[in-house]
Image (cartoon, rainbow, N blue to C red):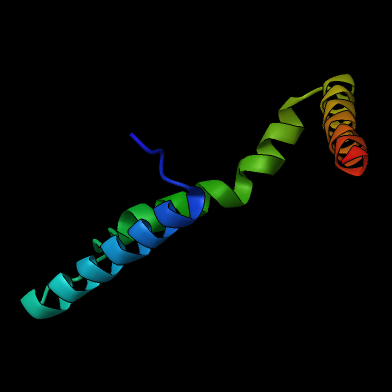
Length: 84
């Protein structure tokens, strides 16, 4: 059995997406389910205060540790990318 390449998988995905769009258009269905407006509003409400609330609940040392870990991770990616 021959394994599909990434290019052929992309083509297959595009073909399936096109077929789904054609079926949706001919049957009058929407391809995307409608979102519940109340759920969207609730999610936006939580998202707007989430980071601030998290930062307020942490100690300065914990915030510093998280920031240091993130910086090390970012810099390690740059070093690994430049080696190639």
